[in-house]
Each structure stands twice: as C-alpha cells, then as structure tokens.
Length: 226
Length: 226
DNA sequence: TTGCGGTCGTTTGCATGCAAAAGGACGCGC
DNA sequence: GCGCGTCCTTTTGCATGCAAACGACCGCAA
Image (cartoon, rainbow over all chains, first blue to last red; front, side, top):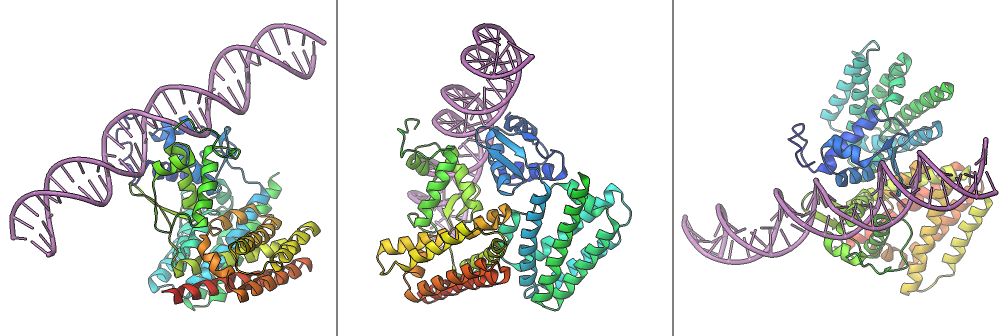
C-alpha cells in the first residue's frame, strides 16, 4: 500500500504518531465500540500504512488504557464497566488535584486568562445540540490541559496519560445534563479562584471535588443504565 | 538471526515482552548508562531477535520514562537530573500514598504478614556488601509492590509504572547510607501499622513522608555530587 | 583557523514475506 | 444428538529488504 498519495496533508512526524493520534481519536469518538476487535490489516488500510506502525500505535494505546492486547489474539477496544470508570476517575482526581496544586504556585496571568476564556466559552453554550456538546467537551479538555501544563511536571503529565482517555459516549451523557454543566462551570471558576490566589489547598480541593463529582455522576448513570 | 538457540530458557510470551523485561532490567541495573545510545541492530543481536520487537520494546520503555526516543534520531537511555528525580518522586509520593490509603481498607492478613517479612528481612541485612545492598533494594521493591497490589486499582498500578523505574546507581547511594536504611525501615513499619489499623490517613501520610524523604535524600546527594 | 557545502556511511522507519497460532467448519465416532 | 479430532482460514508476530534521513567527514574558501 505504498501509493498513499499524500492522504490528508498528513500530520508531521512519523507514521506511528499519525496512526496513534488518529486511532485514538477514532476510539474516543466512539467510532469503534468497546469490545470491538481491531485488526491490524484493516487499520493499516484505513490509515494508508502497513501493519508495522499500526501494531506499534496499538501498543501505545494499550499503555493509555484504551486498547487491550492479548498475545496472538489481537487488540480490542477496551470496555469500561462502572468499576473501571470509578477507578479511573479516582486516579484522575488524585493526579489532577496535584497538578492544580502545583499550578497554583506557577501559573501565569496569561494562563489564568485562558482559563477564564474557557469558562466564558462554556457559559455561552446552551442547548443540547451535538455541536454544543462537542464544544463543551472540547472546552472542558482545554481547561484541564491548561492546568496540567501549568503544573510544569513532565512526570505528572505522563502519569495522567494513563487515565486521560475515555470514549466520548460517556462524556456525552455528562455534558447533556444541565445541572452537571452548571456544576462543572462553577467548579472550574472555583479552581481558577484558587489558582489566582496562589492557594495550593484551594486549587487542589476544588479540583478533587470536581473530578470526584464527575465520577459520581457517571457511575450513577451507568448503574441505572443496566 | 533466526537461529536463536533458545537463548536463556526464554520467558514465556512474545519476543517484545522478553526484550522489554530484559532491556528494562539492563537499563535499571546501570549496564547502559544514562545518555547512552540504544541502537536497534545491536540490541536485536544481543537479545537474539530482529529489530522489530526491539523497536517496540523501546517504545514501551519510553512510556515508562526510561528511554527517550526522537524520530529519525534513535533511542537513548534517559538521564536523570536532580529536577527530574524530584519530579518523579513527587508523583510517586502522590500515587503510592493513595495506593497505601486504598490498601488500608482491603489488605489481607497474608499481605500484612508478607510486609512484616520484608521488614524482618531488611533488618537482618547489615554491612555494605554489594549482596547486602542488592537484597535491600529487592526487599524494598517487594514491600512497595505488595502495597500497590493490595490497593487493587489497575489504573493506579498503570500510572505508577510511569514513575517506577530509576537506574540502580541512584538506589545504591540510598541503600548504602545507614541512617537512610534505618529511616526506611522505620517508615515501612509505620506504614504497616497504618495498614493493620485500617487507617487510610495513617497509611497515606506515612507513605507520603517515606517517599518524600527518599526524594530529599537523593536530590541532596545529587546536589553535592556536582 | 574557522565556517560552509557536498559526499558517504550508518541507522532509522516502513513495507512485506512467511511461519505458526487461534478459531471455526466439518465430519466422524460414540 | 453431542463431543471430539482434523483441516482450513484468518490473523498475528517476527525477520528482512529498502528508501530516506541524519550526521560525520572532508575539502575549500574566506
């Protein structure tokens, strides 16, 4: 399949990175369902490469907890049961709280302004259209990304990657819920206040609360789903 | 190089796993020095495989923070400057403290006994022979491994992998220091007490203290090294 | 001497071939 | 009818070929 004809003004970097990013996005978007088998050949064709980089990307995604690989059996999209999700969010709570705590001592006015901007942006989004929900999810991710970057801890960022990705359907139920939206927005402003005050404790506590609230909502929803 | 002659009663599993484990051990043992280049061909020859599994193992080790890979430039053993080490230990402190906290609610008498056993074993080791230090390092790792396993959180375990590995020379200076040994042993017993009491707070605090003490010692030593 | 450009060897990244394992279909015996 | 063994297909895991990137080396000019 060496005639890849400059598929889509391809990203920079190597093939593995490209497949990793795109496949990750595809899994998170829900395009591949939990439990679905990920065959190397098919993915290679899809991404216009060979099986080698696909295989490598799959190994990286396994490290991110998005894909399960069993030797000689292949890769599948991991499924998230309530216990899994709760576990994941609890680790996220610990790590993101710590990130916020570190950020409180280092954050710049620019970053604070950017954080405020995400809140304003979220506030301006009303309704439940797919576009609205998309924007909210993206905005939320921006917020967390800024805080984590502001913490300035490479190891913390690396650790967070192991709990960063969950398929979008889960997020969608969250951001479709009006009261959760309001609660998140309030929490974000609370976190910003802590960061602005340079208060490690406030930033940490507010973040922990925020993430654990999300955990509770999601596990609750999943429980009543079945 | 397909005549690999059953190199060393090879581990089970795939070639990648084997290379990953062995190379990881080699790096941690200090056999490859920080900054040293890791050429795929040479490693393939050493491990009796081809470059493909080696390349994949290197990517996994990059995820563990032990190896740095730059596209088209190759892999190197990561070097640990004082800031790196401090960062790593701070994340470890957060995660291991949390693990101990979780473990306090779930640990079994068997695990408690195993933890006690590691302390007794450590206590019986005196002197500074290489063998003694080896044993202390292994014993210490056993202790932490048991606690983490007892936490029963797969995501926490996964996150900890990103901060688990540091080359042995660093550990050696630590375990050669008599007062650090004593302090570690006392801390371990403190943690056990917290776990036995089922006290999340005690187990957490003791663990955080323990890991941060190690951080301080190491950064201190590194500072005066230069 | 120092800086720059061209050349060549080395090493990576990717595509592909191939052996072997896993899973399923089929048929046989019970 | 059901279990079991065998054959066949699919898919993985690994080895290897090859193009392209990197960087070291060398010569030349300022």
